[in-house]
Image 1: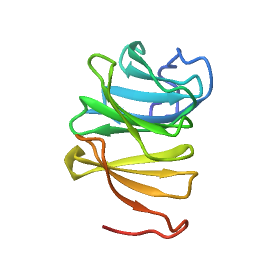
Image 2: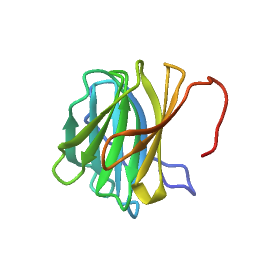
Image 3: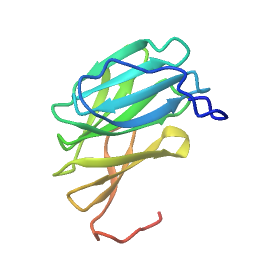
Image 4: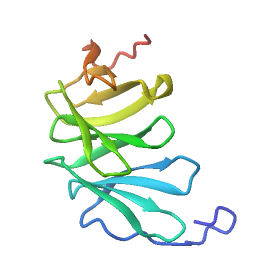
Amino acid sequence: WDLESGETIRTLQGHTDAIETVAVVGDGGRAISGSHDKTLRLWDLESGETIQMMRGHSDLVLSVAVVGGGARAISGSSDHTLRLWDLESGETIRTLRGHTDSVESVAVMGGGALAISSSVDETLRMWDVESGETIRTVQDYGVLAFW
């Protein structure tokens, strides 16, 4: 959109089902979207073209966050997993397992070294992005904890 006029500049087409999540990558020239079609797409916002389509989740993609400077992203899914992606190749770097229900949100902190996810399983998990290991789990649903 043109923020001043509110006019649509470009429509990005490619997903075959509802888009659930989107994040801006790097300097704003690219974006990544996750969909109910179980895929993520990396978009060139200038041309509107798909740069990369990422497959790996076996259920809906519900959340995505950009890691570090924009070379990687992490996604959460109804398949109970998170996946760390290489945006250049479109390949999964690693799958993070631990949640027992849909992963509804993911955020990145610590310069991309840490991720925090929330799930329908009523837990928050802090992850070491490089190892894929859970650092801490908070199970008190509805309680926000700061580490």
